[in-house]
Image (cartoon, rainbow, N blue to C red; front, top):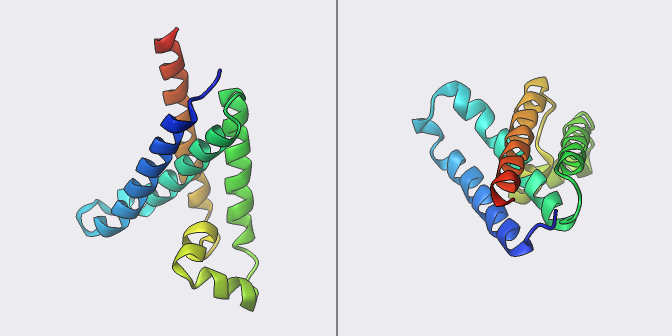
Length: 128
């Protein structure tokens, strides 16, 4: 498969916008959706980002790389040093690194990545 980087860049921008919008609309969302939507969208953005970078790799490999990246990022939240927490205290640092480890975040990441992979597989089948 050869992914069109323009399409994937546009999708990444859309997913980022949806993630930021989900924070603004959090008061209107049910509690369980609000708790996990941002994490699922973050993982979706990671998947789309890796698909953009490695545009000729299989969907399963992109999903695996995205899952590993998300796992490592979540585990890095167990490290609480002053300099790392200063980065997390910035808006961008908090969005990229997160704040504290939660097992439930891993499930949300899995859902976000799985949905992206399924959508990509279905899209590929529709093209052929």
